[in-house]
Structures are given as C-alpha cells and as structure tokens.
Amino acid sequence: MSYVDEVIAQVVEKNPVQPEFHQAVKEVLESLRVVVEANEEEFRKNALLERLTNPERQIMFRVPWVDDKGQVQVNTGFRVQFNSAIGPYKGGLRFHPSVNLGIIKFLGFEQVFKNSLTGLPIGGGKGGSDFDPKGKSDREIMAFCQSFMTELYRHIGADTDVPAGDIGVGAREIGYLFGQYKRIRNEFVGVLTGKPREFGGSRVRPEATGYGTVYFAQHMLKEKGQDIKGKTVAISGFGNVAWGAAQKLVQLGAKLVTISGPDGYIYDPDGIKLDIVKDIKLGHRGRIKEYAERVPGAEYHEGCKGVWTVPCDIALPCATQNEIDEESAKALVANGCKVVCEGANMPSTPEAIAVYQDNGLLYGPAKAANAGGVAVSGLEMSQNSYRLSWTFEEVDNKLKSIMENIVANSLAAAKEYGHEGDLMLGANAAGFVKVANAMVAQGVL
Ligand code: NDP
Image (cartoon, rainbow, N blue to C red):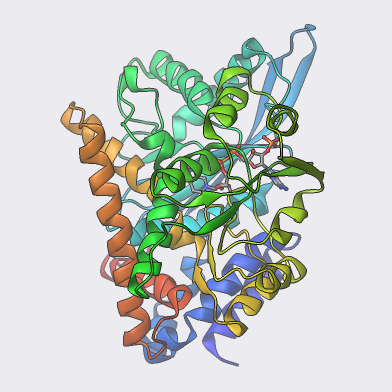
C-alpha cells in the first residue's frame, strides 16, 4: 500500500465519527500523492504524514454560563492547536450548534496549509463551541464569551496561539473575548485578531476574506485573459465572508444576483442592492427574506441548495462546508457557470469537485481562495507588534498582492509537479512543502 493510502486508512481508523476530518485529510493527501511519491523514503522515515495529520494539542473544556432567565447552561469549548512549524497557531473560533471535535479538526488541518500559503509566519489551529449565538441577548453572548475565555486564556498568547472569528464569531464576540483575556492576564496584547478598530483591529479585516476571494477569482480570470467586470455571480451565505465578497464584486463591476441563508435564498436578476442588504444585516440583524419584501422583482425561494440553480458565470460559496454536492455542481454547469471560487471552508463535496474538473471549470479551492482573512489577521498581528495602524489602502494593497502571489505560487507548484493549471494540487503542494521542510528541520516533535 502506498504511504498516502496507509496514512489515510490510519486517520479513518483512529479518528472514528469525524467524517469532515477524514474528507479534508483525503482531499489534501490524495492531491499531494505526486509530491509524497517524489520524497517517499524521507517522509516515511520522519513519519511526516502521521505527524501532519495528528494535531500537536487538542483542548476540550466545559463552558458554563447563566442565561437571561437565571438558568445555568453548559456548552463544550474546543481549541485544536494543529501545527506550529512555521509560526504561532492561528485560526478562527466557530460558535455554531453543529460544532464538534471532527469539524474543528478538519478546519484546523486545512488552516495549516492555508496559513503557509499566505507567505506569513503563522501556524495552524482552530477552535469554537457548540454554543448558538442566534437569538441570544447581548448579555448572554457576553456571559458565554467570558466563560469561554476563562478557560481558553491559559492555552493562548500573542506568540503562542492567536484565535480570530469564524461562523458566529464577529467583532462583538471578539470584543468580549478580548476584554476577558485582558482582565485575567492584565495585559493588552494582540492575542486575538478581528478586533474592532478602537482597540487594535486592522482596517480591512472585516472584509478581508470576501475581498480576498474576489481578488483570487479576478486573478484566476486574468490568467485566462478574462475580466471579472460584467460577469454574473451567485453567492451563498449572508455573513461576514459573503458581505465582503458582495461589496468587492459590485466595486469591480460584476453583477451579484443572489444571497442565501440556511432556510432559503434571494434571487434578484437586476443585481442585489447592497444598501438594502446592509440595512437588513448591519442595521437590525434581520433575515434575508425581508429583501424580497422590499425590492420589486426580487424573489425569495425556500431551501438553501436552490441558490446553485440560478444562471451565473461565477459561483462563490461563502456559507459552510459541503454546501455544493454533485447535483448542485451539475446544476451550476448546466446553467453556464465557468468559475467556482470558494469563500467558505470545504464548501464542495469531493463529487462536486470532480464535476468541476470533468467540465473544465476554473476552480479556486478554499484554502487558497479564502486565505485573505487570515492574511489580514497576520497583518493585524504585525500592526499590534509595531503598535501602529496602517491605512485602508495600505492593507488592501497588501491583501491584493498576497492573493495574487497565492495564485502565482499555486500555479507554479502545479506546473512543477506536472499538473499545469490544477490550482487544488498546486495550493496543497505549495502550502505543504514549506511546512514539511520546517518540520524536518526542527527534528522529531
Ligand atoms: P457568518 O456566521 O458570518 O456567516 C455564515 C452565513 O452562512 C450566515 O449568513 C448563515 O446564515 C449562512 N449559512 C449557514 N449555514 C448555511 C447553509 N447551510 N446554507 C446557506 N447559508 C448558510 O460566518 P463567516 O462568513 O465568517 O463564515 C462563512 C464561511 O467562511 C465558513 O465556512 C467559514 O469557515 C469560512 N471562512 C471564514 C473566514 C472569516 O474570516 N470569517 C475566513 C476563512 C473562511 P445564518 O446566520 O442565518 O445561520
């Protein structure tokens, strides 16, 4: 059995009931087969793949908090410190009822390669809780965040592990988490990124993942001699990533025709009006259905998968994992879609990716296409260390050039390993080689 197959089999056997983690490991290792085969003896001797697929540390803890009725509630907190070969652990916190250890491990594993691809000195980690912020009062969110940080603080630090936001964790939650860390440790340091601007947050961080995904799509198209301007785009989600992407698309002259939530999606064939979206999203944290009630000609449809049946040139999944399955991928192709660029983490199932590849779509895989968020988090860490703040243009320009470099480096790696144009293989290989070399150089850890 090949080394890659052996390690995949071990991961499946030793990590039962973690299908998302298995999926992420399979996706990465299978596409790295050609790289591993070229160095098989050395990698085997160093048990490199076994170490790479085993987190350095996995922390699970109880998070008790009191709700507005005086009832004690209990959630589970997680932090998986996956790999620190090239820098302190870095990766977001997700608060969502679906969170479990397997989901955090899949996200942490992907984060290792993504962070390496940015070119910044950051390792990979991920965390979160099965807490559901939806429908909770501000006081309840604060109580939860304070309790969560009361345990987490002992495991993180500005040079050790620097969490950020993810699903369900935005500026409000980061603010409460940061406040509690500062209170317990009595130190004001850049231990979290995605902070509000008033206390060390970077300009462009709220928009960074979405902006970065659009820059990535723009650059992929440019490599093919095409422009994003005038293209029709379908987006899923209505959160942080989708909002950043929507703004950048409209700025660049693309036509955005959808947004979606877990229950349904909006289709506005005339182009989504961002001022209305902003009012619903930021004005009163409303539901997307409201958009169709306010905009003549816009339609609301039940069911989140329908968003992939809308005619479009480009699809940007920005909601959650496995949101595009084989059927949705086929519907995209049938409706003229030529580009899929992933804002969310692992939004396409392996079967969906096969459909993109069989039909010659341009495919920007998540760990490359959504690396803009963590890249600007890295820039936030630098600004915190220097105790200064760069302008919007400075950060945006750095983000744009990081995304362009990721496309260029991934294409170069794909070519080097004989798979010209395969961005999935190229991104995995470019991210992996740096981490692997650092691990070997640091000895048996
Ligand atoms: P948010 O919580 O801000 O937004 C998620 C959005 O997706 C919400 O609008 C949510 O709706 C919607 N949603 C959830 N489940 C579904 C579903 N099954 N179908 C359709 N819509 C759904 O999270 P983010 O924008 O931060 O994260 C989105 C994705 O991007 C995740 O995969 C995350 O890991 C990834 N990502 C995020 C980064 C960041 O910087 N924030 C960085 C890199 C990747 P509702 O609120 O109604 O549940």
